[in-house]
Image (cartoon, rainbow, N blue to C red; front, side, top):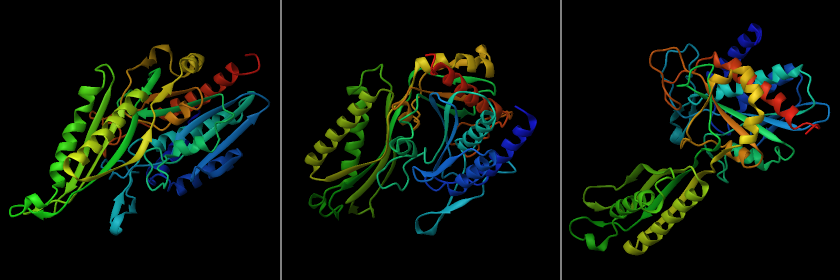
Length: 401
């Protein structure tokens, strides 16, 4: 990559990083992307999947390849020494400010896709490349239908004419110049759940028999659900149920009538994931009967597992060797993290790669950490991976095949 382009991309990345925006609120990020696309004279449409942008670069007749980047940040207070670290907040409940941070590297993903657009602008090829700048990968936020940006983007029909899709994610513990991948089910199915238990208030000492103890109900429910993985899921199938938040009760001498619980379910296999949910819902119904309590469950996110296509990866070999070299492309095990690129991967053959972005500091931090720092030297690798990958796939899926 030419030095002038790299310098420009670093400037863009730092501008996005210092101005993070939560899912479905990426207005300023989208405006910056539109400005850069205007400069490149690449046509685009705005407000796709709410705040997303899809740019199209067509050169003659041929197949269509999609390149995707996510734009949203996280509700985390940034705690590092970067000159361009975020100090931005958004208004939360009761007017309380919520700090925002690009702790997952989406600012880099967006920058890399803009870099790929510039690299591809004057390259000869036959076909169409779609540059998808997607909102709200991290969650569904205030979406009334509880859909993420990836799900909404697929539902718009933007992939209906696409032969294959590519995505990437920076990895802050993987050295720059390295690329990692897992074929097949690479990232987990995931959901976030909220459970509300309604019992009956009573005096805790004088008349506990007149109440329905929501805390007792909650403790039984948590123990029963926590046993699902060990007793109902085959040992070779990775799955996790984690209860991460619980709140209930008003006083030490009052039987609690309300308890709220939150948590997440993860499983690598979609059938296993659905089995866990079905078993959990059975336990909830049984617990309601046992205690005469009312229990409601709500799912605020529901991602399938991400599928990496072995044929797309095989077709990508030439591009991967050009950008990284054969010895720097590393197979890894699947992980129980989730990504809504999963919706793309279940619509069209896809590959999703982990890109080395490890900082030079002695201590490095992982994704979603308030202290995480990404090495900007990864930007050329990401842009060139997308650029070379798109050209390679266009040639593979072209008329000769």
